[in-house]
Image (cartoon, rainbow, N blue to C red; front, side, top):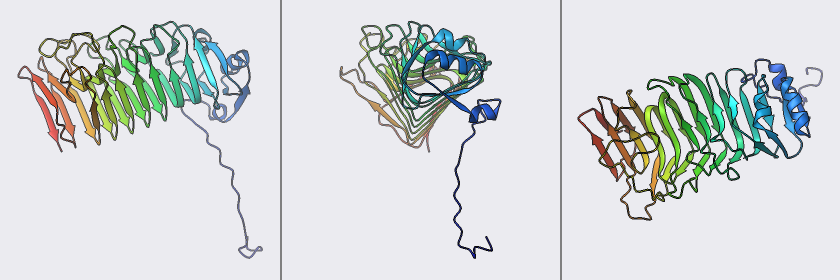
Length: 335
């Protein structure tokens, strides 16, 4: 450089090595391009990250037979998954990025997250429109204590009951479950029954739900937080108000799942099923309600019951809020 008297041009080529979820960064760096499902499966079984050169189809059973971490770069192509649920557990973290996923399975769940599971959907579009029975795209199974879900820069469209859901299993489960939704759109349309019974995100475990720069829409509720902590920032939670089932639970004990009042956001609980506290932090959040049936659907329905504390902090004072409590602590703070 001294000899060149300062007239130097330096050119760099940058490469990203993703250490997580890979145990071996060399495997993360080395990607193999595959053109058939057989090549895809062989490479994954060898622990090699793969890039698709064209559209292809593979069964969930084949993906579940892989005992290595799974990394699939769709490279703008469509991967059709058939059969039962794809399982993410402690044996193989799953990352799928950069393309379309068409889930044509006949199971109630497209991606099943089990103990120690890690699944990342990054820059993908996932649809379940070809499945008549898929009730949710990503589900945390019953009794799970530790798992991580990352949905980033993606569009998830479910024709079932939920886009993302949790199954409490035991009342105190899910303490180390973290779900991160970032810069994504999650939508449920045409709920499986004739009542348009759907909710964008159902969260009912003791873990943590983080939502940033995203839009989540359901027909009965946009989001339900019945247990645990939810941090929602710069996002829109919406209900289309199209549910016609007639069970609205405005003044009665709530049941399981989304058998709760209609609202853009439902926080807390009005039953004995979930014994731990609910904390919801809202910052820059729009709660959007469409009410085509004139049902007087609120933006926020907050409840505290059975000695369980519900705490909601928001930087926005919403116009339409319903509060329900049996004397238990329900605190809504507008910062």
